[in-house]
Structure formats: structure tokens, C-alpha cells
Amino acid sequence: MEIEITKLNSNKGVVLLELLDENNRRVTGAEVEIENHTCVIIFKDIKSGTYAVKYFHDENSNNVLDNNWMGIPKEGFGFSNNAYGMFGSKDFKFWLFDVSSDIKIKLTPKY
Image 1 (spheres, rainbow, N blue to C red):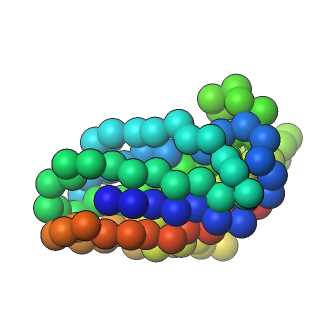
Image 2: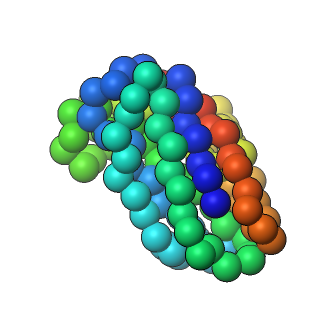
Image 3: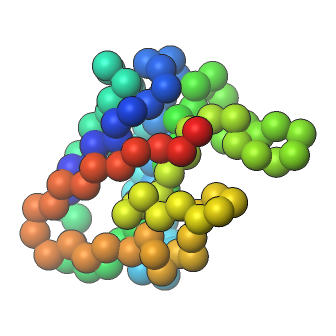
């Protein structure tokens, strides 16, 4: 499985990503460097099934999605299928995608 995240605001920091199963349980995760406002995450040996992805651009490398005083994220974040709602993400079911063989996913964060 290859996940490409593009249009990151800067090359500062890292992208922290979690791969979740269909029950919203963590399968694995990654911390990835950014180059040219893009990062690529490759997961090997992922079994066929239904998965979801959530991630954020940790620009200050503190391992936390920083928010302003109103709770609005100050760093870019995203979900599989680019499933954004009015205030954050849509329900988890909109994040889900099926994996039956090698798959490439392109995502763009929301800032």
C-alpha cells in the first residue's frame, strides 16, 4: 500500500499517520519526512480488508496536533478518501476503503 500526501504547507516537521482497521483500531503507523511539500508512506504486507487512514502534519515535531484556543487545528490534517466535513472529518464510515491488492492512495490535508 502506498499513500502519497501532497500540498503540505511546508517541509518543516513530519507527517504522523495511522492505518486503522474497519473497527477503528490501529493496525500500524508511520512518521515520515517531507520533501517538496509531499510525503510518501509505504506499508508492506497489508492483508486484504477494509481500512482507514488519519494523519496530520506535525510542523513543530511535538507529536501533537496543535489547536488554537477554539479547538481548531493549527496544523494540517486529513483522512482517507479526503473525507472532510464542515468541522473536521465526516463519520468514520466515509474514511473506509477496500484493499485487495497493491493500492496507491493520494491525499491532501486540510489547513
